[in-house]
Image (tube, rainbow, N blue to C red; front, side, top):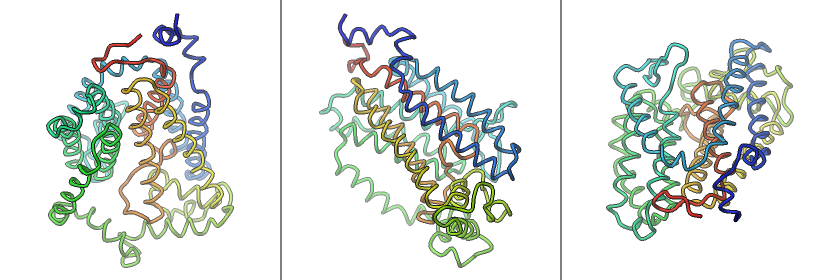
Length: 380
């Protein structure tokens, strides 16, 4: 049996042997850091955030390990149905979604509050990857062939903007753009899109919600309203600066412990780390993220199937965008848009979505020798 044909008939033992255990341990380390920071942010108490986060992480870790054993051809088959279900749930959110913090983004299932826009990040990567996997390079160059994937992107982005959720909509667009680029879409077509966006930006400003406009103006002049719209980012900068090189120590951050830092368990959890462990701790966490991204892009490069390459690249880029936007946001580099720090911030659907994405990455790594034709049939 050839190496490639053997990859088509992997047993459970073979899959466990081929599993990227280094990536698994890295994910566990990041999840553990998240639980520890939430324990500190909660006043060195397992409630209200650390224990629920630990429970969700352990459950998500189990799901991740199961998904890592699933053949990537299964994901190829269900990519469009999965996308369709998520799109339907986004419509349900608009009709009867649960409202929280002034936004309608969730579906209350009783035992769990589901945020479909988070799962759409995975569904959209799968759907776009399947579409471009089935095209030849010369077909991708035809403008008409780009209409279906553009509609795939615009439909969920439009629904997410209605919630309103500008941050998630932006991540969907950027991750999709990355898949378009690596699939072979020419660079000048992206330039045309950017010019169009710049042209309609003044019109789009008038359609933004008041709080979205406030975030943009606060980004430019945070000190203009230090006790109002500028409060969050100013307190964030104070906390990061007070951490110095080595930090104040675990559980000793004054800005977070004395309740000066808002949303410290979600959007601003990175600031808790910076205040308690300083620049060294912050750079250490970013180094772990760098390793995770390196694993992800390496998996994309080593997969023998075009579908696997696109999915791994799309998921890893989405993960990078999570980290970049959150860190840039809390340091005042970009406006606050409400994006969690992956595997660290408190959350339910966001945590599960990230671990599902990690499970897909691990599965692509396990089945990296599997090759799939443009029609979806395995090549031996």
